[in-house]
Length: 326
Image (cartoon, rainbow, N blue to C red; front, side, top):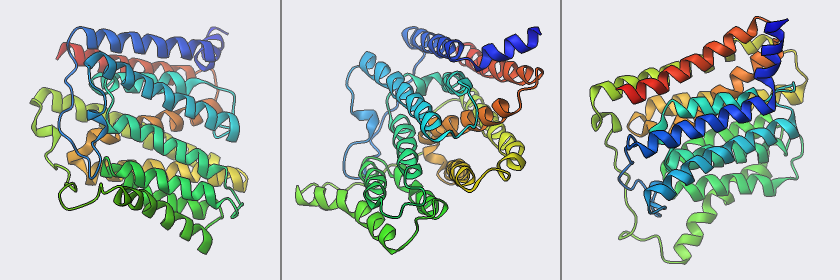
């Protein structure tokens, strides 16, 4: 009975909002004590990259945390509108907050990774609304317009273009009109910038490809890799555990879950390939891992599943503690 009460508490919205609030307080304390190392350099192709947008370290911290809140709201809307988790739960709110807290340097500043974890989930929301409706080409145009437009500030957005093309096929809307809308969406931001004279050989800059791992000490590098490996492992584990459950869903639910799988695998792939820019993909990795873990733990609510939830909480609390100690 006690395990059941604890399990219900872990899935409740009030508890997870309180847990997320506690994570924000811990992140702010980390920032106030001077532990945060600001990201430097401009990786923009045409426009400045997001880490240069906000002046003032306090405003940057507030914007970084606000960005994670926006991502959480989009997760909430995805589940409310499209029922992606197939159950009543708010576990993903607390899990995402703790996963973000495990890399508090990134949680407490606004940069391309923060923005990527807003834009890609927003595009997923738009894509899901197009299921079996090839006439919604305006949504397709907007998806690729957003990816291409923000791609002018950092190339990481452009690496998700293939994933959304695959997503169009999964939503059963891949046809000539869809492809044309996608192409127009990709071209339009650059066309607009060219019209304003922003694109010319003098303003176009290649991003810097130095690795962040070469600029931090060995202990921080090891801790970062352990954190990323833990989150990626959790995501892949719950993906495998969810597989047999999802193949029994109806066609719409399989398409929705299939798109999440494509985004998750794309995120892992680009982190491995574009390792010099690995920090930009961490919030997206947390987004995918939180949803995959919640999907399994919310559809397998045996009393003892609360032990797995508590272990996840403990792991990320320990990773945060290591950030302070090291």
